Length: 163
Image (cartoon, rainbow, N blue to C red; front, side, top):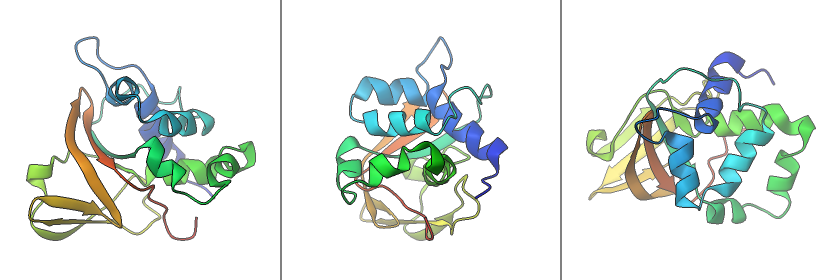
């Protein structure tokens, strides 16, 4: 599978590279939280750590370690294999939107947003009574600000169809 490597790689690399000295970037913020170890390890395994040097604003729907644990047994281990690197990169890119979106900017009802994995169907973001869902995942913590974007913590890993 050919992921738009420039954009997809840049996205995940952004999640892994050091950011501004003034404020923590998305990866630094996630690492400090201590509950995104699988997400960070997956991004490293995808070989995307050194690909980014820009500071595009991003929104990351970040699954916790517990969300990865909910996947069927062996899924994470299989995705971490070198031969599945492109598939893993595509899945990670599906969790990122190439702009900053806070929970207050999400309108009530359903909104479709395009992730960096442009080949997958758009993410369905639904907001009702100040509760936000992305596809079938629930946002359990919103608006964690970083120097290069915002993180919304989700309780499931988002898998694009066909992955």
